[in-house]
Image (cartoon, rainbow, N blue to C red):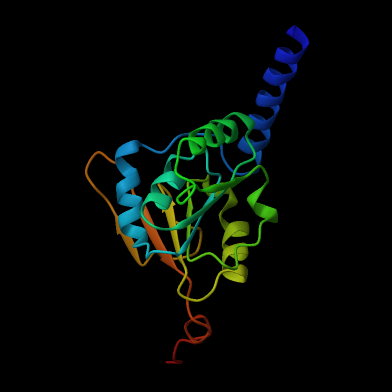
Length: 182
């Protein structure tokens, strides 16, 4: 039993470290901001909501309650397990799906909305992935920091609360526009 407990603690610490270095440490989103995230996302019933680094699953569960098909990716063992337990208590009709894997290897092409709370250090690499995989019109919601080199369509700022940023994947013609020569 002691060996099992030691291995579990070691696994949790290792996965926390891996998550911290690859994208962000687990820092739960403020509960009061989950509604703001969903409002900014403007989820339509049946849309696919993907959370990169889904933590304890609270945002995924809220997106599922809002009518989305919610999918999360988490590589830190403890938040992943918390999510799995949380989802056991939800109706199977609205139960989100969570994968214990890195979002870097996930296919995001079907996502209508992507939500993330990651460190700015992953910005450039992440923007390349999002622009390569997401369809035009897909929405990307970021918590705290906007995406590197991508101007948000809208920023939700409320006094004494963290900012939310809405990015929209441009259409092919928008991304190829060339400024006029003067």
